Amino acid sequence: MNRQNDTRDEADTAVFGSEQMLTPAPTEYIPQHKTLPEIAYQMVKDETYPQTQPRLNLATFVTTYMDDYATRLMNEAINVNYIDETEYPRVAVMCGRCINIIANMWNTPEKSKWKCGALGIGSSEACMLGGVAAWLRWRAKRKAQGKPYDKPNMVISAAYQVVWEKFAQLWQIEMRQVPISLEKPTLDAKAAIAMCDENTICVVPIAGVTWTGLNDDVEALDREIDAYNKKTGYDIPIHVDAASGGFILPFLKPELKWDFRLKWVYSISTSGHKYGLVYPGLGWVVWRGKEYLPKEMSFSVNYLGANITQVGLNFSRPAAQVLGQYYNFIRFGFDGYREIQQSSMDVAQYCHRNIGEMKCFTNYADHLENPLFIWYMNPEYDKTAKWTLYDLQATLQQSGWMVPAYTLPKNMEDVVVMRIVARQGMSRDMADMLLTDIRNAVDAFEKLQYPTTSRIAYEKREKQYGKVFTH
Ligand SMILES: *Cc1c(COP(=O)(O)O)cnc(C)c1O
Image 1 (cartoon, helix red, strand yellow):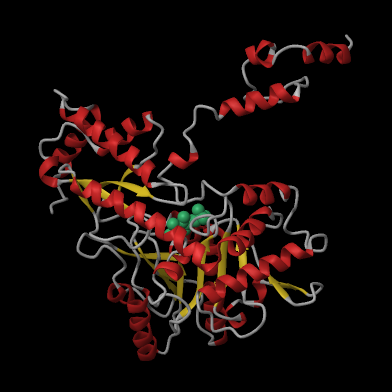
Image 2 (spheres, protein in one colour; image 1 turned 90 degrees about the vertical axis):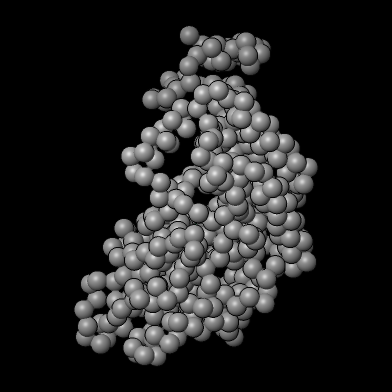
């Protein structure tokens, strides 16, 4: 058979008149024959067609809107591998400038021209690097003192993001968790100190807690650690996981001390692809100074006209995000970032107020610290409700919204909450559409004669374990 003619015949066929569009998509083996690019494109594109619009996904913290120029810049750099610094030295310089800008935004005391930091594929890699550095510093010191170094631990609130569980598992670090409660909804500094000992590699407060949207009080923690270190002679440092807060606090709460202005903050990580406003995946970690980055984690390149320190778990990685981040710094400037973050905050506050006014809901916190918040079902209303927040999630999903319902971490597992993360790209008008959809859904739930399946399951569980959640 002449494949060439065959292909030409197919080229005359409309995409949806082709045989391939009537054939099941490959799931196990690579297809034997070629497919025309238009048809292959359509098949792949259509796989994602029934998904929600990314901007209606209010579950994610990650950027779902960038302007046309940013998108163009990033698309144009899609074929650039960041690691090939010899070929693309300007990308490495640009990365160094981004690290400088971020380090200064976080009030680094470092005086040298190039600040000490690294890029990651997200906060996860950045957290890992910060954690590993703390572990290696602790180990080196223990070795030098002739003391055992086989039982490292770290202290964090139970509302940690899953990356810390990975860090603890992969590097075999014991994770000591400070529980949260309605009375103490963020990391309790005194309770954290009570869990520290000579084997503690670091304490990790969170700026922008994933579960609640609140901030751990880093200043209070720093004070407690300072007193504890003085008393014991240890030098337990702080790594701030500022995945969201790292790009919110400098703009909206510049007076709040949570960063390198505090004595024991040795490293900070953030997600460039969250409120850094870049498409995924991009993370950053910055150390207080070069002396806090263990030598064995870094290698230097000197062919850039300056010494740039390189650290990372992955070797090859996309460079486009670095261009996107640098573009944002130039395009928005400090003022632009502040305005965008304030807009997200305003939209979040508007939703928070409206949700709080609905009799079926209670907000978790009275005020917002980041452009996101959680709420739960009003405990009084809950007694007679025939539905749950999971039903609301499912109903909203039918109009394309992703508003997740979930249970809080350890010690508060009985609290089912719902969360909205407002980001660039969420307008007041969109908030009104969402609120209308929520009100309509609740109206419909209130006309139910019988409880939903999710409600029945919820009450069964409650009967079995007792109602732990009382307000
Ligand atoms: C999102 C998040 C992470 C993980 O960040 P990625 O950028 O998704 O890898 C870590 N910690 C906190 C507090 C987060 O919110």
